Length: 456
Image 1: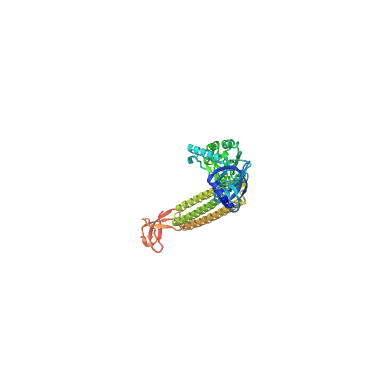
Image 2: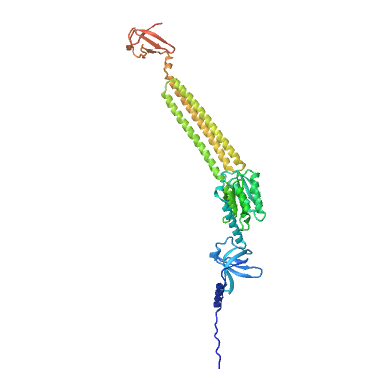
């Protein structure tokens, strides 16, 4: 009697791999794994492949592009990380692997929770209120800088300040910006530096780093010292994506140390342009002043020509001289004041070596001022000459001058000026006005030339 062969189920390798993967994925939910990254690969596809290991074991891991795109900072070999993911099998190689869904530096979760708790507590206390924020001075003359003396941040800030506003003095207070000794040193700097120097604003900066590297700026003591600082504080810690508790407490938060220097200072190029604008305004004002003076002079000339009496002519001439003197003094005083102001500004700029362009502009301004003065003097000289000729013409037409040449003005008893002998009769009295005094006479007869009998 023959025994039937037992039934056998035969799987292909890929089928078995799929079964094992299903068993693992169904039996193990998403979980957290801690370890050290090694053999990290970033192919052109954007996916990450690496090994997660500890002292006794290692596990292949994959993190696809749609997930790792948001990871900051990006990991590197040797980093201790905490990964949330699901376990599976890669059928093509039959390897057990972890599909990572989230990655963070080991210990970051606790730090973030501490950060959020302190932030919420200080915000509820009112330490971050906008009403407490102080405005920055528009033109700082003395700037405090609290940072490490050996980091890249101090070089970036000093370079930005020298480029944008070299007129300001910078007072550096070096402190450690990382480690246990950093918070008390930063607090001490925020308290002591405003007492040592009469600061207008203070910059608290450091370069980028991990959350652990920047933790000194998340200490409560540092935040309270920033808020209690005697001068406005601009905080520029890390890169643009980094935010610390000190940023919330500061009067102004900057994305980077260089941005902190730029936000705290004006641009000297803008001020140079404003200075050139002031020069143009001064020249235009002087030109308009001269035009108004010329109009006034022409108006005075027309009025003087319409008024014959010598007294008014003298009064107008005196008034014109007075206006001329006041105009000269006012213009000279204004010009001297502007020159002194320009010399003062040039001296300040000269001490910081603003360059050849300002010296060239200063020489150009001097030449324009000299040209303006010479043209004004020539214009005034021409107007004075015209006035003298007008006065001579008026003098030549003055009736008193005609009497001085031997002529007389004859009037009848009613005081009317006689220009015709037929207007008088023999026996009437007449009066003749001479250059000096007058005489009375009686008319004996009339003809083409009246014959006058003078009564003494």
